[in-house]
Length: 161
Image (cartoon, rainbow, N blue to C red; front, side):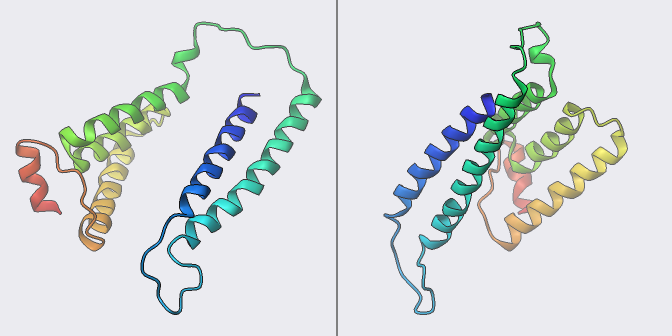
């Protein structure tokens, strides 16, 4: 039932985003038929029917199962989903302090441990390679202004991107 509630909230959010995307204007290229608002509106218009379809499937499964209510067992916050949610919040909070590179490196490694991946060497290698690729693509190629951190981390980030 929680998934159905989430899907309804997501549909409402997509409707709000669609309405707000109607105000997107700006320069148009002569060969562009949709304009700058076309791509977001297309994604939203594809997402809403899919969410409705998933919601109907969830609703039919819930009616078919009629399982008893789950009770609070005290183990709720030890589940991997809550551990990963806490790691994600800590990652977002650390971006401006530690910078994109260090935060992302630690985030990928700690998230792997959060989902109970046991091979530390592979996980460390994966986090270093993935962070390097992300910094290279977004920091260098696309020139996206990534968070740099404070203090000596800021100075170090100027060498990377």
